[in-house]
View 1 (cartoon, one colour):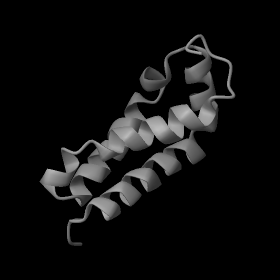
View 2: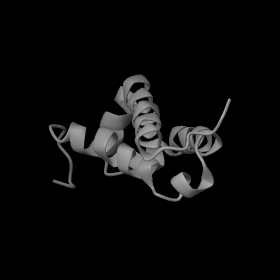
View 3: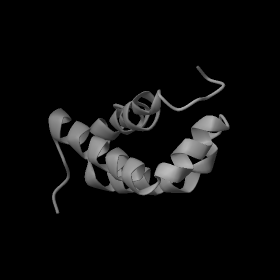
View 4: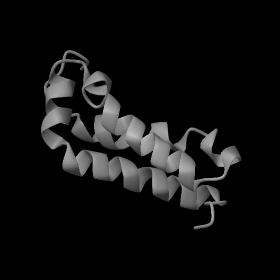
Length: 87
């Protein structure tokens, strides 16, 4: 499979991976946000997604941080309704 070479495709891939994390780990995400330990609770899943993303995009796109931005958008911002000491 060829590497993703466009910014738009890299963003879409990052969001798809983060969306899957959100979909399949809802209980862990809630627990992590409530306890202010989201990234610790999901460390393994996040790193697995990061490895997948890195294997699929061109190196110059990987360094653009699209995956981390997608994580914040889909795992943090979209869960603003959950009570947390963060907000």
